[in-house]
Image (cartoon, rainbow, N blue to C red):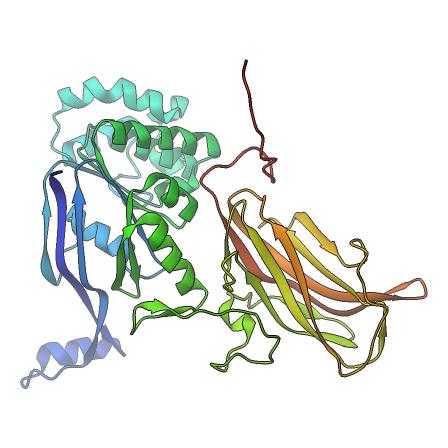
Length: 425
């Protein structure tokens, strides 16, 4: 049986919150020990055991307590209650700048970090060449790190962490600032670490990376432990939480399906209530026809914001017609986060627009397709338009109404995966 190298038992981290700064003083001076604060549980009874050689992901929404847990494991923070046992030498990238003196040069910070980890200057001198080679920041290694870009800073920090021969490597979103080549280099190191029997704790919002590299994952939501287990199963639960389809009291999925074009589902919610909507969506048009509801549906029939690459999925929306409309055109487009239109189609291009729709009619438009986009986040826009003579009429458009996150364990070059089949003879 594999050795346990990290054991977290019933960890709580509680912060005292005061409505006013003066209340802190009142509480400290109170003869009756009256409380003027409320307790905020940043972490509430977290349990995790990590075996030697595992790569374990820690996922959850912003503010869920992921970084707090890592800081407790590394000793940067003390838990309010509970215990942490670590068997091995830890190297951690908790956040950009942690453990670095901004006035020191890159070289000086390498020795500083080594000293903090218990290495002598002589030992760090032997590692210096490998660290400088991995960082690839040139002569900037001799400059104060306050002059570094975020990418250069990440390169140096990871180069130090990866080359001090830790038993346990802890990474908290530190790779997101590096360029694609640096990230690829780091992930190759991850694989080398795993092959060498090292242990990795990895916090990331990139769930595709978690699926690819992490054997198991821990899911935390609002400080509470939701589940721990096989990464694919934990990510699936997380996707349900993002789509408001998880019952925390019963610890089970609340399925939101779209079989019937009702105004509201049996629990009083509309389809769009299960989608993470954009508060800054551009919503405009003449309203001869109006988009009243919409959904992204995965291959299991569930409304979601997350689609697995190479799976079939639906984009569907309901349109209510306030007036008679001739030849309405129903559209969708998908853009990347920079606003570049990646793909899309409409019922005119597909040759299936209705000839006429009477006022008072409700139609449900469904686009069925295979997800061939690379892993990442994209913006979805919906529309209902038409032509009167040669003039385009916009009845209703929802620009960037929600996002679609594509989960992928293998990406190729560019926006799309052409699903190449390669033979070498």
